[in-house]
Length: 400
Ligand code: ATP
Ligand code: MG
Image 1 (cartoon, protein in one colour):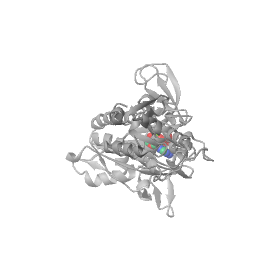
Image 2 (cartoon, helix red, strand yellow):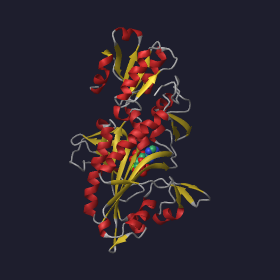
Image 3 (cartoon, rainbow, N blue to C red):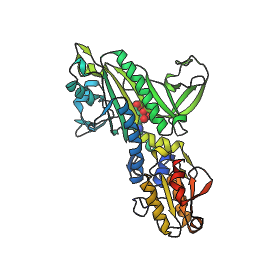
Image 4 (tube, protein in one colour):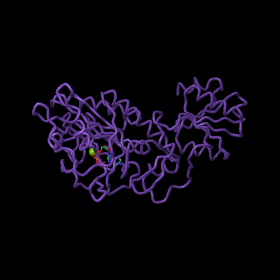
């Protein structure tokens, strides 16, 4: 993709009226556009990242037998009255308050499941979607971390016994860790205990990513690294009995719940006179994008982990070298996604944009490098650049 053709523009200055670092960087680098508090458009660069995260999530949900559906954002009031969740602060009520905008989807998936799961042999099943949620968030000042409209992956599972739910719940935990690992957040993300919120009276498990921008406080057990949310802080770690904790600011990137029969009771969803046992498992896809930016950046811009970067290579041409286009084509042929900065701009501007946008590998082609039959390769986030022979680039990148 040629940068001259790409629908984007970078800004040298921070956008006004934006307090959060992730939004400042994502707006400056041309990934998102702000429409209002907690409402963002994803521009081509941003959408590429969202799609990469979604695909990681999708692969991991499919691996645990999740089946993808897509439910409506526009929800009739009746469904929500059944569960007593119509009168909650999150709900946007619209169309003379006959409808609400979905902020979670137990109220929609439960009656659907009831239509299709009619006998014991239909169980267990797990259904998920990656969909736009709406929540009337009073404090939408954290960029993608807290949207009033945002992208969530929500998975729902249906079981005939508690034991079956318990087993599946453990599988989901593993799948969640796999997602965070693949998004580069392995060393920053902790599993912990939290309250049930508007979903269940019992406890739930959250996945928390450590970042200064986080709105939660967690206590990480020094012994086993299990985390406790401030709201459920206990004296001893419920996982290992440890008593020493480290306090950290963090953002909740996922939350999983054993719902029991709360929603199957509300919809009278039964098999052989026994209510179906459910679990629900949320993950903030757009919040993940924001969290990744909060964790991986420096004073020059974003530093994307390879797995979710909008492109693999940022290719800079200096002085209109005919070889640059060939390098671009050769790399694309090998399967690399290349953003070729062919714009008529000063080299300094191209270098600043490369740093701001944060693509993992920068390649420069100039008269100087070509004299050596080479290009200059540098990893974002590292200072060291090296010359690599034209014929060796693809091989070199494979080992990056
Ligand atoms: P928080 O405590 O941060 O408000 P929550 O507990 O209300 O989140 P859940 O209902 O558990 O959130 O939603 C599932 C997941 O969706 C969360 O773990 C989070 O990653 C994401 N999420 C929730 N609210 C938002 C939001 N306003 N903007 C972006 N992502 C969100
Ligand atoms: Mg939660």
